[in-house]
Image (cartoon, rainbow over all chains, first blue to last red; front, side):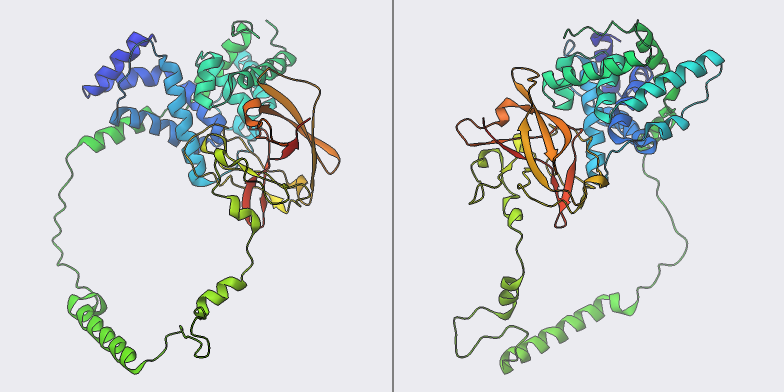
Length: 176
Length: 250
């Protein structure tokens, strides 16, 4: 989705047309869910917060200017909502990714099973912060600068964490 | 490092596919809530007779009770009946009894720093054993050298909405009972603006932390440090603190 298309969707939302929201949902909900899940570590909470992101988008459509990087904007509000939830519930985020993996959808073919296990293995090796940054980088396509803005971390730190993620990903056989 | 993320296409494809499969279908619930919110509120008409309030909630009773209480209070004042606040007749300047009790209660020294901000970096304790530091309005606490970690942290206790350090803190029961001994500067410097520090607790290397150089106060003999999300915080004396530390500048 381009910035212009996103802006059109926001305009639809402002006109109270649900199509705009549905298009944004279809494009980004899966990725935002991963970002939120990385922060919260709990699927149920992540589902609530992800839903809340879209509800707030509907209730208060932002005055979005095309060219400002809508993916970074979405990642930021999703992350902030996750952090708010976290503070409210005062939870630690010791995430057991292997447990989460059991709750995932059922793969349909042998190849998909292998792929999913491989991805889960990689994610299980990552800390929540690493998973968050990898999600923003690889799923949302954000730049280090945008991730730094979304997470509040220095850009150098983001790059450093990302570099550690890449090492782990490569160690799991994803060299290409 | 470049900002190019195209060097792992196989991983990206697999991760994207995984994310799409892993995502729950939230759209029906979202639309249902939206539609429910936009419908006019239903007017509920109850045919049942209004439930009678219990007597102690009725206005008449409350008014009577208030008048009775006011009368009692007036009588007490007229008769100078003490209600727990008494003055020492021999010492008219003595504080009320309740205040005296407060004075006897222990005061946690560290709590005195809980309202510090980034500008209070020089608010070191008298012996310079610790200071508090809150970059970007986050509350960070420096654990004094020699502090015994009594139990793992279960919450951050962060009050401000500004999110600068992330939230991925986890507790580590293995550190219970440990003592914050020292922090030394590691050899590696990650970037010009960041320095890698190495935390040593009980003589054992715990972890490395990245520190923004602007967190180090120039000209101060101590540098304030804050910690990356992989770090841990601890609960001390039933108060929650991030484990932070203070290093002597080299």
